[in-house]
Amino acid sequence: MFHLFQKLSHELSKLEKSFIKHKLLIILSNSFKLHSRKALALAKAYFLYLYILLLTFKIRDTMIKIKQNNSAIEGAALVFIIGKSTKKKQEFVGLSTDSIKTFQDDTEKKFDFFKLPTGFVFLVDENQNAEDLRIAGSKIFDYINKENESVHIQGASKASLAVAEGIALSSYEFKQHFSKPTFHKLTAISVTDEVSEAKISELNNTIKAVFWARTSVNTPVSHLNAEQLANQIVELGNEAGFQVQVLEKTQIESLRMGGLLAVNKGSIDPPTFTIAEYKPKKPVNKNPIVLVGKGVVYDTGGLSLKPTPGSMDTMKSDMAGAAAVVGALYLAALQKLNVHIIVLVPATDNRPGGNAYTPGDVITMFDGTTVEVLNTDAEGRMILADALAYSKKYNPEIVIDAATLTGAAVRSIGTEASIIMGNAKDKYFETLEEAGKEVHERVVRFPFWDDYGKHMQSKIADLKNIGSANAGMISAGKFLEHFAKSPYIHMDVAGPTWLDAKEDYKGQGGTGAGVRLLYQFLKTHYSK
Image (spheres, rainbow, N blue to C red):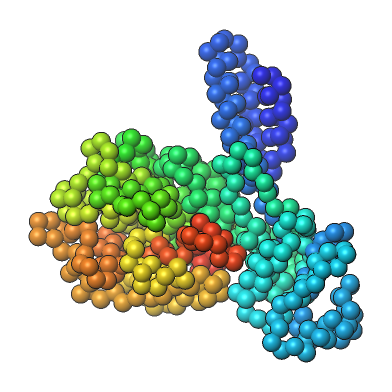
């Protein structure tokens, strides 16, 4: 046992996350002082717990790092960004003037490669939009990930960053549950000093935040229930420097959050309500922006049970809205964005067990509104409603929620974009649309007429939790608007946050969609 502790302690010393290392080494140290059988059993239990955490964080710490380096290390794949302004002389080491001219003269060719005895060489046309350059990066990763440990990118700053982003995002792997995982070889991306250290740091932090969101969405409820999700948010706060408060079931009951408690009634795992706050010393916004994320860690549909194939089997992803808002907050804090942000995450699973809430029930919500439940699979709006009503206490400038809320959203615009709607001023929607175009996490604004609110009128209560067969994504938004007392935007992210098949740098499974979008929105809107 002692040798196992020694090995674990040695491995922990390699971790970059000092707050984790400090916490775990303290537990290790205390474990050595225990002598009784009971204490030894406790120590063994600690060891198992720590070993699982170690595996998780080791995988997280293997994330590709982007660095500044004017020359490629030996054995690196080479990427040359070629533009019309690139001189015909041999300005790239290892690339002939004839290769540059041939590529420039072919106006149709945007991407090319060849393999030398020393390794892969890629040519990428600089005169493409950022998304095409990211996709080029994804293609490069597909070629090199089993052969090269590093790749060097040389060329214009903006294009180099986009290609690096595509390569790095493509490198994500979810291998935590394989008994003998194998990983790609690529560990490093280098760019020249044309790219500033600040831009490189921002991109590294972006990759880190997106990867956290992807892993959270991909992790099954057997390993990520509501309490475990809350604990992860606490860990992110410790690392990035934001405050986190986790309300447990008794506190949620004292607040009378009827929607969250109703959805949780069928589960043996308790709900949580997590409040995370990042507040710089002198934020640019007088009132905070509040982000609310749907945290349904698994959705069976409850008594309105989902079919399994193509539906319930992917419902570990139903907390992707929470992953998006938490990931955006994490990234904003890592980047020390000068914006006051509060994130609210109501979290539970939705099961048909125990004393599960039923179609026909009438639930009293946090703000006193009564809701007739007609479908227990419309659970996301029930827990979001309590969080939106709770946000009133912060007197926010604006409230934005992100939720995998409706199948209607996916059927209307597919996985290519998120749906947005609400009653906030146009300037917020415009900035959100601009941010979506910038990072290619596009949004489509839907109408939000009061007529759609009539779909949610109940005959026996203030509201009902489902509307008519038509425009379900909009009537769901109108339901939520009732509880939001500040300027409000609803984002239905059901489409882009999960992909059944691999798609370029977005990968397969959880995509982390929403993290880059919301961060770009915050960064852009509050710099105007």
